Length: 200
Image (cartoon, rainbow, N blue to C red; front, side, top):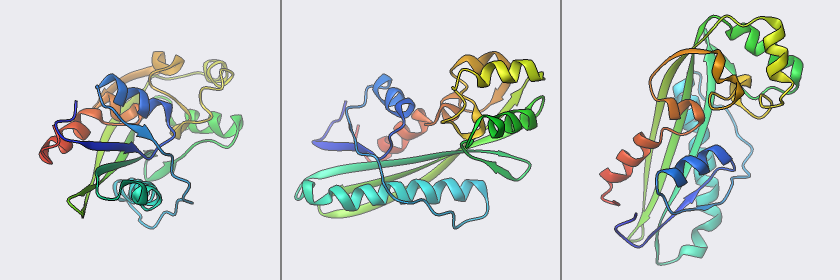
């Protein structure tokens, strides 16, 4: 898929992001970041941008010695769920997952994904940072339905305690924006940004 001899490194352990990139035809390797993420901004769009940069830069600094004299790209991403100004991360346990989903029931919330592209080309490092927002509206969900979903454990490793592409899909009333952004990576936006760099 690449028109040049450029390696792509995904700085994320998320199987969903890897799957989206594979489906889109990307050839890449995965090197998860081990950085301890620090929130330094206040608005959700800037928070995800900062966290994506921290991940990408951590991996960039780790692997750059292995790519001396070569062109490469590191892609970092981070996704958060936000409702009424409150950031909803990954739940610590089933009770917190229940509380999050109860809060979002019959309401509209926002999903933000930040992306950082670190591009080493001809010895120069270039940085590109962006974010994508999607509005998601849940159906009204009763307690039995919430507990039934939580019992699948699908909620525990996802921001906002749900995955749009799994068993929770039946509770999604509508979305406004990029579906794949809610999964964890706005793949079309990423592709278009890389095209601007004349990589494809």
